[in-house]
Image (cartoon, rainbow, N blue to C red):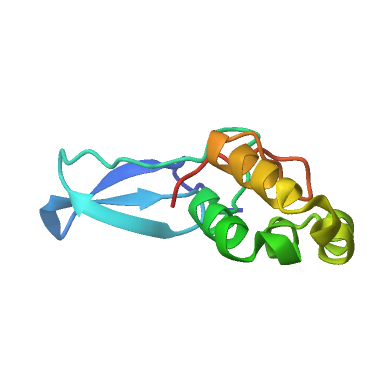
Length: 116
C-alpha cells in the first residue's frame, strides 16, 4: 500500500518554476508556476457533432438526407433520402433552418449547439 499524494498541482523539486498536475496515479500535465489553465468543456447535454458541419451538409446535400446521417438520425436520413424529393425542397429547407437555429438533435437526443 502506497501513500500517494491527493490529485492536484505540485511544484517540481528539480525546477521550482514548474508545476505538474498529479491525477492520483501519474503526472499528466505541466505548467509554469502560477499560470492559469483554462479548460473548455462542452455544455452538459450538448452533442459532440459540429453545428457548422451539419449546416453545410444540410445546405449542400440536405435533399439526400446526408445531414441526418451525419447527426446519427439514420431512420429519418433514409426517409429523407427516399421521400425528400416529394416535399419539393421544403423538408431540406426546414432541416437547414432547424440546424442553423440550434434546435437540431443528434441520434442520442443531444442538442447540436457548438459551431466548430
